[in-house]
Length: 84
Image (cartoon, rainbow, N blue to C red; front, side, top):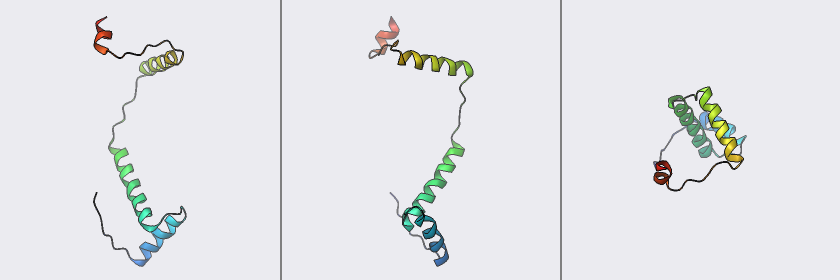
């Protein structure tokens, strides 16, 4: 864990305190929240998203429905299962 010391002007501290106060946040918690949101936004823009094909999505939904209906079996020994 890293500690950061930050110097804010009175105006900056006031703005952040007012913003965080709406949610019941202290100034440090507001700053952590804003940094967390900035990191989240950055990671979302860097994380690739792969779309499933329509046929793959249909197969997945069918498999999910079959599982809900109890038509599936639990596999604990994959080697034995795939050798059959």
